[in-house]
Amino acid sequence: MMSVYSVQLLSVATFFGAIFCFAAFCFKSLYAFIALFAIGELLVFATQAPVNYVCLHCVKPSMRPLSMAMSTVSIHIFGDVPSSPLVGVLQDHISNWRVTALILTSVLFLASGIWFIGIFLHSVDRFNEENDLQVSVTDRSNTIPLLGETTQSLINL
Image (cartoon, rainbow, N blue to C red; front, side, top):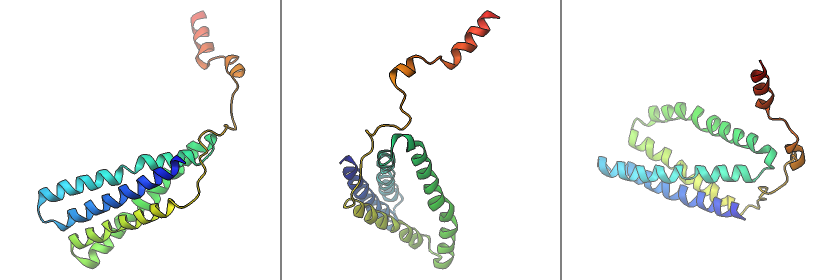
């Protein structure tokens, strides 16, 4: 049930991060902007650990590397790749950087809502499931270390 708490944390942190970032772009004072934006970004990026937690706990242990790889690639494909052209198109259309920043920051409220919906979805924690590629203790003790043979052959030369 820990996943539900992670999703609640994601929703709340993203929502408050959105509020702080949105408020930062409303101020004309540089000091107010820096303070509010720093807090907002801290809250938004604090969600990365729970996202990784959910990615690791919703799959079998043998699938965890693939899960993290898919998460990382998805973040880049759906975030980094289209963001620059979309920001440029929006800025060219509006021609006001403050309004553009407020519109783009509003996307965080949408993300917060999506995380909030996730609270009500049933999830399965697969953290303690048996690994498909489990090696027994006796099999592990009978293996020869990879460097063991190489070291011995170098010593005998």
